[in-house]
Image (cartoon, rainbow, N blue to C red; front, side, top):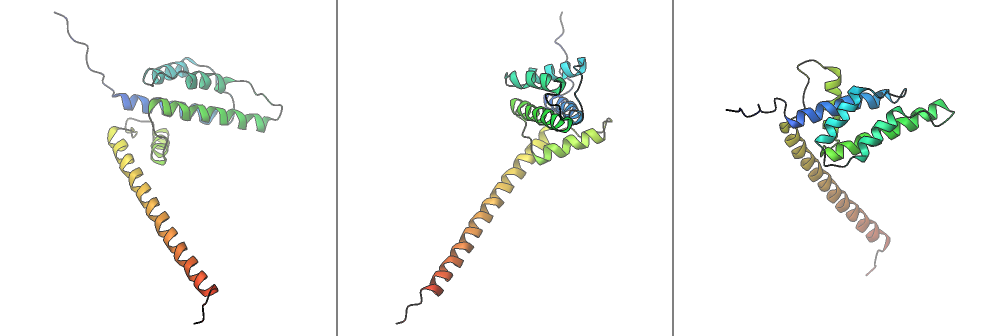
Length: 169
């Protein structure tokens, strides 16, 4: 009599979030210096790749870029180039995982990095739903502002034209 394997104790979205927090720490370190190719980084990238859409290139690029030697004699320029490359691949990794790199997501990552204890906020399905609703509300508000601004500008232009072209009758 064989038993079925126990269900996964940590949900997929929480594992993905924790992996992205770990990569965010690596990316932050890369602002100042190269990051060694550790086993922990390898496991984190492998885990995230397992949950991705199958696009491997961003993971390989992150692995290479974070440990790449400086390609410039100017230290400041080399740090900027490495930081940009690592952050670019981080955003590409987020896309392969279906994670929208929004302000809400960034604040959750920052909160998790500040409080790495058991009560760290996880980017769960409820937050994703709220984020989606919030994004939709912001887009509706932005569209309303565009329309009202366009109407106001049209009214001003019409008034300017009427003042400029007074017909005497």
